[in-house]
Amino acid sequence: METVSEIFLVLGRIITILPLLLLITLFMGRRAIGELPVFDFLIIITLGAVVGADIADPNIKHLPTAIAIVAIGILQRLVSSWKIKNRKIGRFATFEPLIVVKDGKFIPKNLKKIRFSIDNILQMLREKGVFDLSEVDTAIVEANGAVSVFKKPAKHPVTNEDMNISKLHSSISYPLIIEGIVYPSVLDNLEIPRNWLSKELEKHGIIGTENIFFASVNDQAELHISLKNESTGSSPTIHH
Image 1 (cartoon, rainbow, N blue to C red):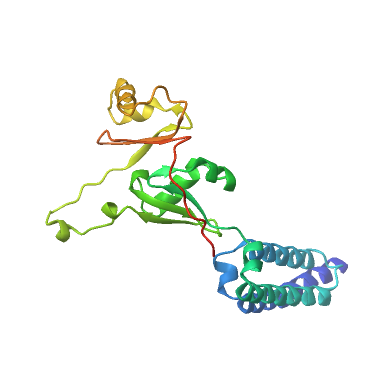
Image 2 (image 1 turned 90 degrees about the horizontal axis):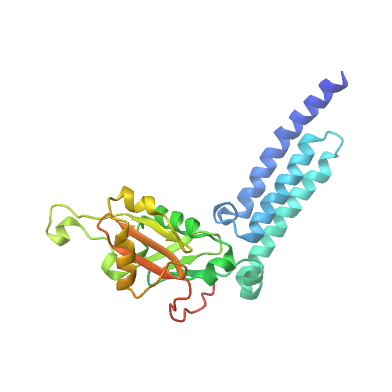
């Protein structure tokens, strides 16, 4: 009988806590559930822990949990207001945007700062419709972990009508060298002779692949190289 009463108690808590959680989430605003900056991410985790403990353990008093949820929602709203009024608080509670690609070249030191791999950036670029690193003028990892991309002017999308042609040809670049390691199977799949790579590297004045951070090739046998110690020029700090 006690087990049955506990089950009904848990069900009752779910029925009462979820509407309250919904109201608090709507109160916090769409920013808290859309971008999930660092502080808002912590708020969501804390809310989940408080609600989860209340639902799972019937011995926990229900009213303090409800008060905690309301208090957390108010705290989030207050901090969001403070961040708007004082930019120093905003910078303290989140990450600064960081440039990771400049003029088609990776910036390895910035990738290390945010602990993103080459594969992470390439995936996010593909999600933005960019399949060739050489098309990128600037790529920025934002505070919420998303990537913003500015393409080189010559790579901006054009219509068939603009070009007065019936069909535009584009090619996908495939990672060929990652942090000095060559993947010959890429050349095999593209039916490019393996000795082609050494000839292309010689054209660029590169001996060996140890200093190559990333290199890609497309189906037109066009090689794009980003060196480990390559200077990409000074990039301004992005404040927000």
